[in-house]
Image (cartoon, rainbow, N blue to C red; front, side, top):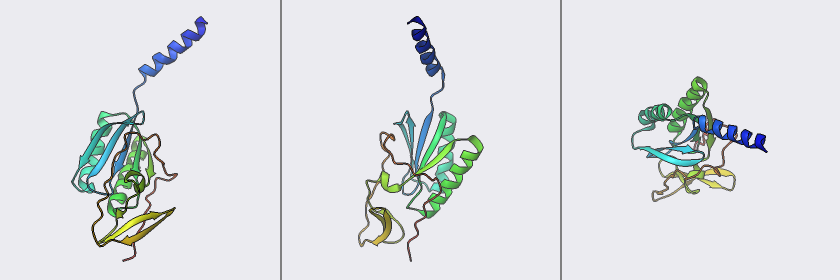
Length: 169
């Protein structure tokens, strides 16, 4: 019995001594650009920028990497802004290679309640069952992206490569 208590005590001490690890969730496919910082799967900080992804993403990521021991970065790999997805993927893949921080993807539909996602002009991406198609809307669709309070149930994709869904023009 004493040995068991000692082992539990050692495990608890080691867990307290280890630095906390954090996840980032990046939503670059619409304005504003959103980054959520998650500790043990729970949202603890939100960063937001109305600037273009090409201007804002790298400084925001650098600030997060300096402040937190990030172990994984999740990003919306599509559909949405082709350029934002491409830039984000290149930055995150570089971080993965340089710092060993795992990069994984998720669907944009998982973070906007399945609402239409702006494509180009008055075309929007919509998801019908497992297929993504484009549909024309005469009036703009106000579909906001939200950082979930918890990422425990967020469905992650097997791949981190961008899911480029390009509408026919």
